[in-house]
Each structure stands twice: as C-alpha cells, then as structure tokens.
Image (cartoon, rainbow, N blue to C red):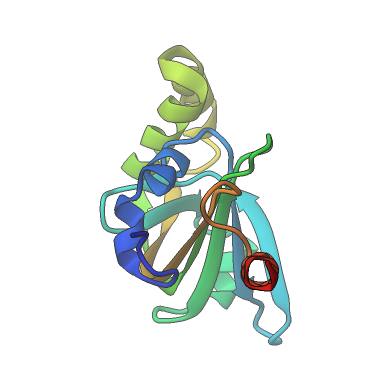
Length: 164
C-alpha cells in the first residue's frame, strides 16, 4: 500500500529520494512582501530533515521571507514518465560567513568536484556572506505517472474502472 499523499513519510519513498538527489533545480514558491506569489528556480540540498537553499545574503527573497512563513517547493524530472516531488513547509533563515556548506554540497552534486570548486572560487569574493533558507516539510506529495497520478486523473481512472 502506498503512503497517503500529504504524509512527510513520503520523503522516504524511492521516488522522493531520487528527486532529492537530482541535478535539476527546485522551483521555490513564496509570497512577496505585498502578498503576491513568486516562484524561482534554485539549487537545493537535502540534509535528511530539511531542504536547504543557499542564496546571497542580500537576495530580494530574503527581504520577503520571515521565519515560520509557509512556502512550497517542487522538484521534477523532464522526461516521461514524469517524477514530481511536491513539498509544503515552513522556513527558517540564517546568514553565514562565506559559502554555506549546503550550497557547496549542492554545487558538487550538480557540477561535479572540479566544476564546483571552480564556481565556488569565483563566487567567494562576490558573496562574502550567504543566507540559508531551511524548509521543514509539513506536507509531501509524489507524482510518478506510473502508480501516483494527479488526483483528478486518479478519480477519472477510478470512475472508468467502476463503469466496467
């Protein structure tokens, strides 16, 4: 039996674990200070409990985000059958001197060791401080288009089976 959509236990599902290690950027959604929605592509790191985003300390999103804010994030593949990890959660933020270790780990995962080291060396003088956005998942969903489909499609398939 599959775990119910919405359960944070879905983070242990093989589809979720694969998406948490992908090189594809996440899409991070939050509300701007005027209440309008924003979504941005961003690299991420999974620390086993939280999804961590690294960004320059003076990035515009840092002016809008406050500890405890509700946000959403999706990580998805670009080939069929699509794999999608949907996360809703709350944020906490901090600022560290230098490059955030989670950002450096994301760079190694995405670019490989040599590519990451080159990028980070160029970034260090541009970003003497880095903000971290920690997303604590409170709701998790998975779509794999093999066993888990969008709810409207699942209802339609169930209706079709009931009609037979």
